[in-house]
Image 1: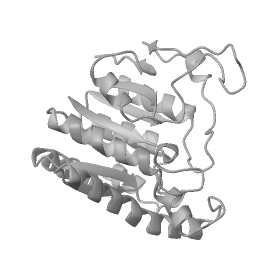
Image 2: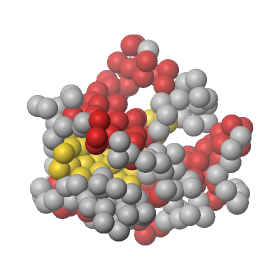
Image 3: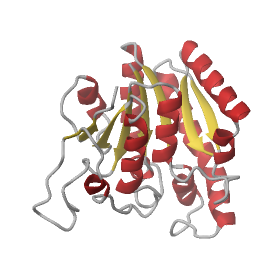
Image 4: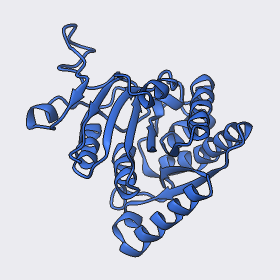
Length: 255
């Protein structure tokens, strides 16, 4: 299968902003093993600003654009150094692709991006994609990496998009507030009632929430790509997903 895996800041970093070594090491190990099994993997990774916050010893995620971009510049180095080091231990090569909204809106740039990613996969390279937060402003931002993951999955004709987050999937209500909330394991149509279940990010470092994941799922399922929202606290959950076990919430595409 061709699989796009999106990991959020909450999976990659502690609440302090410092890298969660256990999670990242396990993620790289599992993705390397899936590549060894013959799957094509594209990783959409958040975490640059979050890791920059930790590296710069800032007390919280910055609110002003200049400090956000500075944190991203520092954090992106840390992020890619970590990925390169860990994937190399399993004899896999990674490539960095940083994108902005303008790159995806311009037909020539968009074509070049797809051509490059296809060639990287042919060369058995694992592309690591992130939004270019160092140059992004609100005007040229994709918005969040759930959306970016969906755009990549659709443009690369992926079989599956996996959104690893800090929640098990989509619930009938907010599980943090309602003890009777139940996990919805499969959705065949994203109705207005389903969209109404979206909420805000529960992580102080990330920007995504359930609403952005539902929008990503809607985009993908309309174009033939299944989507799974699952808890990224144990990246080995990817094995269960690939084996077809019921994990998180699966959105069935209209193929």
